[in-house]
Image (cartoon, rainbow, N blue to C red; front, side, top):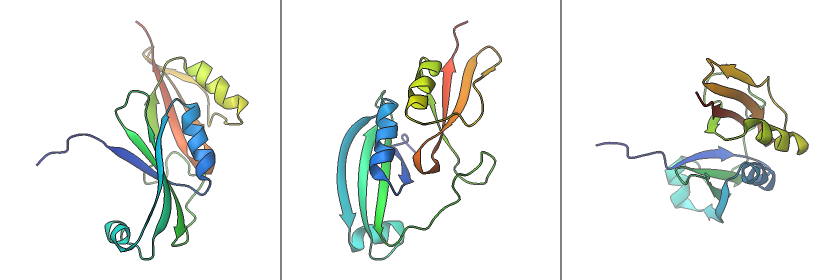
Amino acid sequence: MKIRHVDHVGMVVNDLEAAKAFFVDLGFTFVGQTTVEGEWVGRVIGLKNVRSDIVMLQAPDGQVNLELSKFHQPEVIDGNKPAVSNMLGLRHIAFQVEDLEGIVAALDKKGRKLVGDIQTYEDAWKLCYVRGPEGILIELAEQLEK
């Protein structure tokens, strides 16, 4: 028994289009959209009377997908947004990028702000956190040339 690789990361959002646009702006490719409902999906995720719209996006390198879900039924439970970086649980997704400053500038023009500052770690990585729609927290990491 072994895990082969990460297939996708799932996020529940209220504004599916805003979340989709955020990740497309980061370079993700729209793969498809569907609605899932019925007993079968409820049995998988442990809920009853499920109806959810799902958007699948693929990372630029094709290695992982993001699944964005907008639940119509059952009613969404409001989480702890915007969560801080040291709160228990899944907090952020990190993306290795090229031209971190360029990405940050483009996101800033769309109203997405840095959580803190851009920092350099041991002359090896340039790092920052950006908050997306619905409190989504991402880390951008650019490996520096030596």
